[in-house]
Image (cartoon, rainbow, N blue to C red; front, side):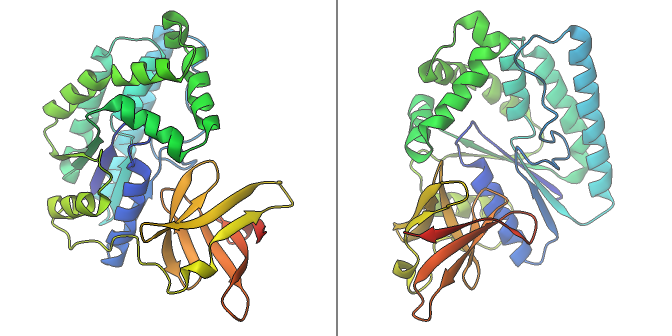
Amino acid sequence: MSIIFIEGIVGSGKSSTAHQLGLHLRKLGRTTQWYFEHDSHHPIYPAGHAPNYDCELSRGQQVDIRRSVLSRWKVLAESISRTKEVVILEGGFFQTVIDHFLLLNLGFEDAINHISEVESLVASLDPAMILLYQEDVDAALNRILSERSAAYADYLVNIYKQSPFGRAHGISGYPDVIEAIAATRQVRDAIFEKLRMRKLSIDNSLGDWRRYYDAITDFLALPPMNFPSDLPGKVEMLVGNYHSAESNAQFCVFALDNALYFSSEARLRLVPKSGSEFYLLGTRWWVTFETNDRGVAYALKLFGDESAPLEAWRQI
């Protein structure tokens, strides 16, 4: 097992699952690299290189993009084959392709052929596919709004509204986006059914992540992972509202169902890293709490890939 794909629609838990699985593999001593959908260093779809969905692409441009993507898959497969590294990709195998063809208002035949070519390129890596799905797509996509801000819904609507698909189908609001995404289910299911690699599908509608993670580790023949709810003994010392004078941003840290969360534009689980440091599950960020001699947090610093903090907040 050298490459693991985690797939699903927006908000299905791909990023959190990829992150948690990557941390688990590292704890087991495996050299592991996981990539999120919008990573700037993504090996297949680096951030900033996505097509401009505000306009239609010519057939020649479509062919060039496909060749370029296949070339990057070939490079990735060759580089992995020379190492013992496990690579985890979320959304990069077929969900990104489906979204691409949908937004450009294209037929899916080329998408299916493209995905088949990619599967052939990675076949020697013993790939494994994990699909997170929801029977009720409408409910799943509406639930995102309770976990993320309304601004996120506006972000999705703007992408779809300005795309060739959106203009052709009169996309004007979030219900239209939900309908468009739900309509791709048959394409996704047909692709998944035809895959020759090892594959696992999980209906995660109930949010029972402990059971889902157990299913994933069983599928991958790994020891069970520690569910990310191992909270520090004095979690109440960390919860509260935090404010940044620099950006005038505000968010809260709160405990729910024996887990600690960071909530601003999205609700993100805090997973213990070391001491007072926590990963923001499903992101490249982590936070460090600054506490007084009684262990009560008075500030929090956010870090990215670099060692210098991106921003600092004080509790209010």
